[in-house]
Amino acid sequence: MRGVIQSQVTPQQKMVAVNNKFGNTNIKNQQGSTRVIFDSLPITAGPTNFRFFENANNRTFPLTNIGSEGNRLGVGETFTVEKIYFNAVTYDAANNTITASLNGLNFAAGDTAVPFATGEFDFFIANSQVVKQLPTTFTQGSNFNPTAVNTNDHAFGMATDIVIPPLLEYVASLKTTPYAIGADLGGYTHIQLFMYGTAGIIAPQTTF
Image 1 (cartoon, rainbow, N blue to C red):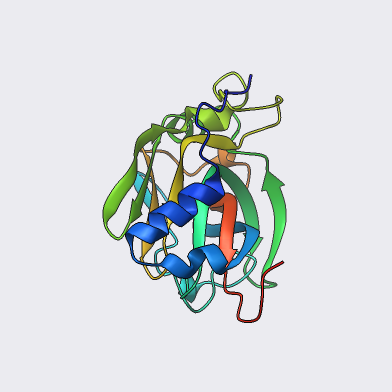
Image 2 (cartoon, rainbow, N blue to C red; image 1 turned 120 degrees about the vertical axis):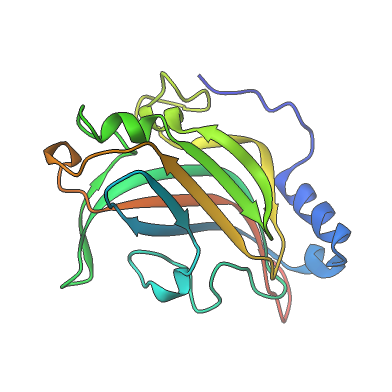
């Protein structure tokens, strides 16, 4: 089941409008692009509040694709978040590789599955909350995800596109109830958050 787009405002139009409010009027002249940002945090004994992108500049690929700029976009950049997606992976620190990946957060039934399936997602830009207490039941497949296009689609489409302006810090939070570190975790060591959508990137010469 897929939701119906009710607004005639495109992600690009909203991106330009929001940045105009901040005085970033040159955004409309930047190169349009598609962008995905992601970050990974280790799974530790709960209760837990995972704060993605905070101090991400201290982590490296393949745990994140955030560079030295940290959890803020550079000058001339902006990003409209259209979908979010959680995933669990097994990370081999010795070789800096990901050795296993779980589609979504469908842990085996047990003390881990329920807390992650009934958590809360929040998103903050410059300490202002723009997504509030979004239940993570959408990570459990199409029966709980109204924007899923098939049974394997665990990406959640935002009802309202979220615009991240340049130079403002952003942090995503995943809250869970207490959980145990046990066999039902399946050996997965890290939780990942992906945020993807439309972006504007610096275009010092021209746009295409």
